[in-house]
Image (cartoon, rainbow, N blue to C red; front, top):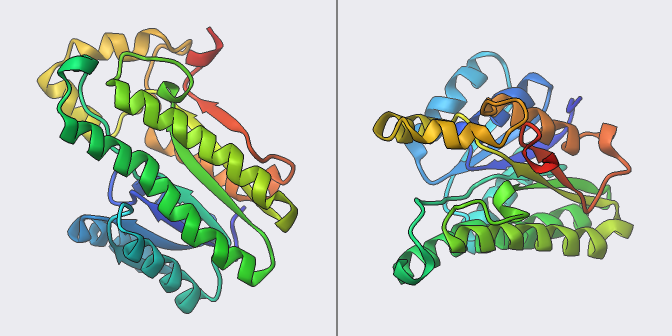
Length: 251
């Protein structure tokens, strides 16, 4: 489905991003993996390289424009193009009420989830425009991007903003053949989620209660949706917010 494509994946060191790295490589893409933890990126990349996949690693922080610019340049210089991107890096924290939330938490949540996507779009889109062959971009939002879920207020605001950026970019670059969509992701059993549930196991019931399927997503299930949006199989879909939430948003 992604044979011959070059895809940049952010937040690729664990969870959904790491699952996407594995799946995209399996489907024939050259993958450029970006995350802050160089050691964790190397652990994700090593078995892919051993299996014969085309992989480049770009340690960096999406809140730093120069790091994103370097990752995009690595994709073009190493594999000849940037055909797609999965802007998956993000961060959230526990449910402190708005008036008690530390300003530093607000800044970090907004930086990683909004500025990070903004930085990625600002550097990925010019590379695609220069190539003149279009492209596909997928941004990771959340059920918190459509309603207040009980997550901290800045996270809810940030994930709403990701959907706004997605729609605006889709409108502005559609005639250039660049499609921009978003995933509305529900509770997902990532490494971070497992760590949280080990400390507070009673939270699992609340994380699964709203999903029709009464379970969390596996990271690969979310990655499969991203792969479809990055492929030509979704060629008439842009500006969309695709739920990957086990039916949570249908209720």
